[in-house]
Length: 89
Image (cartoon, rainbow, N blue to C red; front, side, top):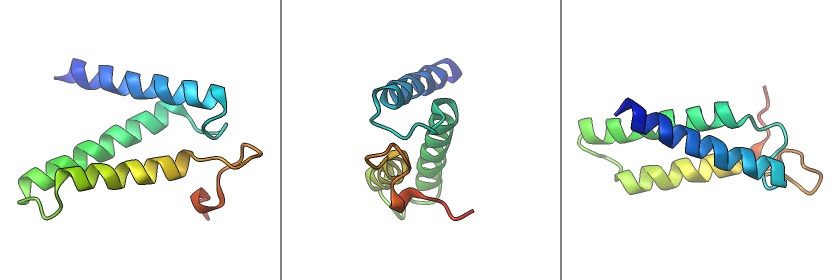
């Protein structure tokens, strides 16, 4: 199972790295960190949903996580973080 998780993380990392290189994502987006955070958040949400009776459906958790991840990865025309993705700290 650990091998499969690592392969998934590496796949996400590669997709993000290609997106950064192509200019689709912010230049300051670290593919290694981003992929680890996304998978960790997804695993945590799905585990919580399964263990606590699923107050939120797994597909809704995944949609929300993808929405957040894409908002953070967005860039404006200059390659800077989109205004909605800027973190104030």
